[in-house]
Image (cartoon, rainbow, N blue to C red; front, side, top):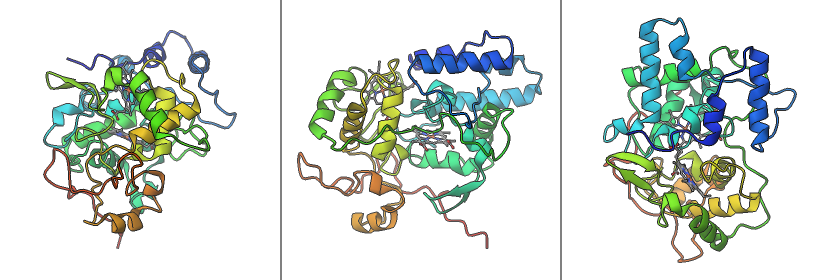
Length: 336
Ligand code: HEC
Ligand code: HEC
């Protein structure tokens, strides 16, 4: 069984490829997005329409390469098949990268294939595509990345790279719709308002307790917090990133329906809930904050006191379903 909301309304309209030539297709694509309320691209921005699985079938690529890309797509949209080995929560890659990782404002994944190897402040060294994918396994999937060079890692990389088909490597232009761009941060954020909004607009799918819904071993609605969610080291625990995700993508099928204030209040509430420990935890929350505050946790609520119950967020040794803190594939590189 596939997740019942595998495609949002947006994704399915963007998968529609009726226009005959490339420039008409691009115009239609931008019209669909602006019609939904997304900003039009700036004159200097790079707009790329990633190919669809249908395009793959119709292409004249080698059948074996097609098979591997199909496998990468299958792993991306049903990452639960790696449960217990590489994935230790209820997420699929497509739980956050909607529309199979191809749609703008939902952190389309193809930019990584054309901008890496590149320097990442998060781990302070030059990363390649495999290591970037490994990052989402480590934090967002609360897991252990497949080994570099393994069949599954190669299949996932191939899927990312194929989505980038035709884009120049190391583009000069900024990429339209990359990441989860945050709306402007309002003056004040309210836990109480966020809680109420979550209950009104989100809990119908994600549950009052943020546990989501799983049926027959498949994730129908992922868990925004708790043991089955991403851990404290995942990008989406930064309130700005969560606000950007929510504003542009949720409630599912109604993107951009929340005000900026609402998106930020919900993000603040959601990111004030417990989840598995950050794999970079040193055993001491103050020390961990000193190390990773400047580059990461200054935008999260990790180590802060929750106003409703005085709890210090993230001050625990709970690693969720996995029995290790840090996967052994996460290590510094020095090139020496
Ligand atoms: C819990 C949400 C979540 C899940 C699940 C998730 N990611 Fe991500 N991913 C993010 C966030 C947040 C970013 C950073 C976006 C930004 O920079 O604003 C990101 C970024 C990326 C990027 C870089 C995109 C770029 O613009 O360079 C890649 C590649 C990626 N993820 C791949 C994956 C893969 C593969 C999986 C599954 C193994 C996965 N992600 C699962 C949240 C998630
Ligand atoms: C109609 C059901 C539905 C509603 C309502 C809904 N979501 Fe979601 N949400 C989903 C689904 C389904 C996914 C995963 C996308 C996929 O698998 O295609 C998701 C993904 C997410 C994610 C990323 C994965 C995770 O669990 O952390 C977050 C965060 C999230 N939603 C927050 C919200 C918030 C906040 C609201 C309310 C403003 C909301 N959602 C309303 C169905 C819904």
